Image (cartoon, rainbow over the protein chains, first blue to last red):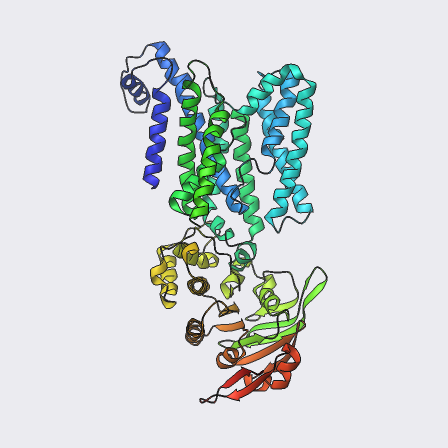
Length: 331
Length: 256
């Protein structure tokens, strides 16, 4: 199963690197990439432009997609575990709304191209979750996850209202704000990959280390306590890790919806309810899903790009209904 | 020295007192049954001893205040089988029983083959060895009860708390479970505190009964001393006859 998931990921990455508007011979692309590996000396025969397309466009974009997909999926699975809520996704505690507000504020004041947009989105995301966590804890939510979710809903509603207000007051930049919100993996070069890598790694590693404890939480807070676990501590560690990863993903790629729900649930349907399997498989499956979705996003309509958030939600929406149907039928 | 000593334990839910200053002492290897009407505080007392709900007073396990122990160490000493355990539908039985090994594992550690062996052995003890790959959602009520008990056994604790362990079981399976608990406490010197509805079963398996009413222990002692027709009429509002069975055991029979 694990081998299958990683084969899928390698296949998706290969497709992401090999397919594109510029027709480059697959064999040459592969030789080009292998040739750059340490200790391997190969001549691909690609010209400088071809090599640049592989190195500066396709490969970083595929890798960024993989990092973002893996992070959002594992974060979604982690949220579902920690809150024992199948509908939880990485944006549950207000990450999306906070990032949206942060990005919108910068776009309307400095323009969509401003280098500070991802930083503002990241800061907004973190601030929203801190606010949700603080409010939830103040309302007695440290002991139960439900209060925390409600605090997240309140914070998200408030921030979304603020974001909508700012957006309406600055109608001329609605288009930029909108395209940011829908998400994209448009990247040239490696800066986004470099930016995303530490968040992806930290978040994935921390969450994977907690996978057994998420199974313990599945029996409820009181029984988890009887088994020697402090649910609030596990929840805090996992929420922090998942939030960092999600905020990083949002900063480099905007709001890409449904990945965090679709991927862990698909994995759950295939392998059962244990997070010991769901989470590692979500990393591989999420990365592969995102690379393939991006492939659709940039090739389905010719030179024009469909926002990737539209692609993932377009597949994710109907898929989610199937998940619900199937899980109803076999409890 | 007694294994479990509760001193002045009280539990309140939002101002309503559920357990009111209970003192209870249970020796190593001893079986104490908590009896009494619904709402008497049996479950809350068990939860307080398990340390899973806020309470006042002190619970000592082997002479150490349980509240001062790290959660994980406390869970190595006390295992709890709740009356209505949460059973995640899609989880396999083996994965579920392995959760019992949690207090023996480091915070982020994974289970070793020893843990899997212990889990399988616990399942075998409960005739659940062949359920390993099944999902919890597919099991019957009796199978659930055995699997939950297997999880508690895998915890290898010194104290086992049972909340209505036989409520979901038919008479045969109920006896089977209680026989097994009895066997284990003799083998491992495990102390058992069980809330039991069925007074006859309570009398036949427990060394000592504690009758609870209104959050207090109102009578405590051997089954024959505690189970009197008067006491049961007074605290449970039930009309019963106390008989002696052919083996000299106490039998409680409802009367019309």
